[in-house]
Amino acid sequence: MDLTGHSTDFTVDASLPDAMRRFVACAQRRWPQLLLSGEPAAQKADWRLPEPDDDYSGIVTFSSGPEMEDFWEENGYALDDSGQGPYAVFYRRRTRPLHATTVSGIRTDDPDIVQAVEGTGLLMAEYYTVSLLTPDDPAADPFSAAIVNDFVGTFGATA
Image (cartoon, rainbow, N blue to C red; front, side, top):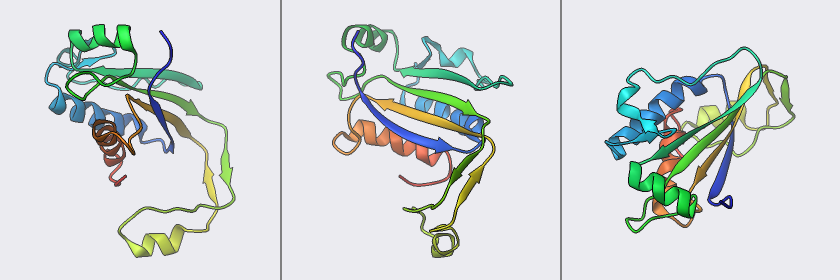
């Protein structure tokens, strides 16, 4: 299968495991028969993102059920006839320091935060690099945009 879909990339803080639990809950509301990494999410009532000690990478996949799993095998990350499709979160825990000299492009409705953070440096000791792979470009596809909005929203932010 060729790699398809659209990647939206993030660097997120160490709260990713909690945010992912909320993201899975959003997916379960969208798709009651959600398959999470190929298994029924309903069987994973207390699902948690694995947290090994070392740097690692992982993937969590999302589909509406067996029919979408079959569609995925055939078509990759693509929209089906209903205008929805499978998506995934690829993540890697990082424990090497990160330093960015300037933070810019702050998105918040609180001007005090913008004033306090815009133009400052960024230092992080532990963080995750994340790629959210959706069926299509969120700028052009409402379903993919909704998935990105859900992901960003699990951090208490807006896309």
